[in-house]
Each structure stands twice: as structure tokens, then as C-alpha cells.
Amino acid sequence: MTMAQHSIPQYSMASAPQFVGREFGASDWVAIDQKRIDAFATCTGDRQWIHVDVDRARRESPFGGPIAHGYLTLSLVAAMVMELGIIPPDAATGLNYGLDKVRFIAPVKAGARVRARAHLVAVEPQRGGRVLLKLACTLEIDDEAKPALVAELLCLLIGKSDGKAC
Image (cartoon, rainbow, N blue to C red):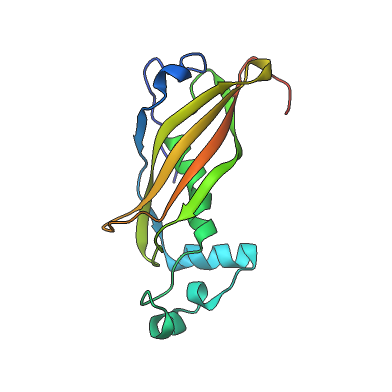
């Protein structure tokens, strides 16, 4: 399944500072089923029972069943934010540049759906015509009052005319 990327009128690398404070919206919902949790556990080696042992998690977990890894939920945010159109049409790409803050607020139970909501917090011009975006992101859980996480993402935009590697 491919996500449709939204287009934001008049949004470009040059005009990005004018969008500071703006919410870019919410992504599509993504299901966090047990199959995805198990695949993440296999990929990372994090096979803690609270994530992968469904029977034990139902018996012993304070959440009534298995929950997604925090880093699994965090790993979904970049693609969801890209879906919102944060990479303008005049950028060749946007690179994950890091995170300033991450807080895991509420567990994501197996079978839940999540989506990202993002606000543009800051825009900093960089050498070579590049632009560093800081986004305040919230990963919402469908039908839950608290979000799964909040994070400040950094995205480095590289213009189409800048063919040099970082």
C-alpha cells in the first residue's frame, strides 16, 4: 500500500519559514497488528514477552494483551509525516536528521490503529541551500485519549539542484 502525499499550495524550501506554527494535518491510520509487532521483534531482536507472547501478555500484562514496541511506533512516524507533504516539490529529498525529544506516553495495544499529526516548529537555513525542519509530532491512537508518543523530528531538506551527498 502506498500513501498518497499531500500537496501544500505555495509550500517550498524558500517559503517554509512562512509555515512555522502551521499544522500539516493528520496522516492516514495505520494498523499495528500482532504480525507487525512480531516482524519488528524478529528484525530488532527485541522479543520481550509483553510484545510477542500473546497468551502470557493476556494473563500477566497490565494492558490486557500484547503491546507494540515503543521504537516500532516511533519508526512509523517518518513515513507518516512524509505523507503529510512536509517535503516540498522543489526538494530532491528529506533526510531523517534526528530527534530532539521523544516521550512515549501511552502503550499501543496489538490491533490498535495509529496516525501522526505534525506541526512545523522551526525552519533553519543550512549550508548549500539545504533547510532543516523541526516538526512537533504526535502519534495518536484511535479511540484513546492519550497519544502513543510525542516527538520533535528533524528533517533535512536537500534541493533538487544540490546533487552532492551529505
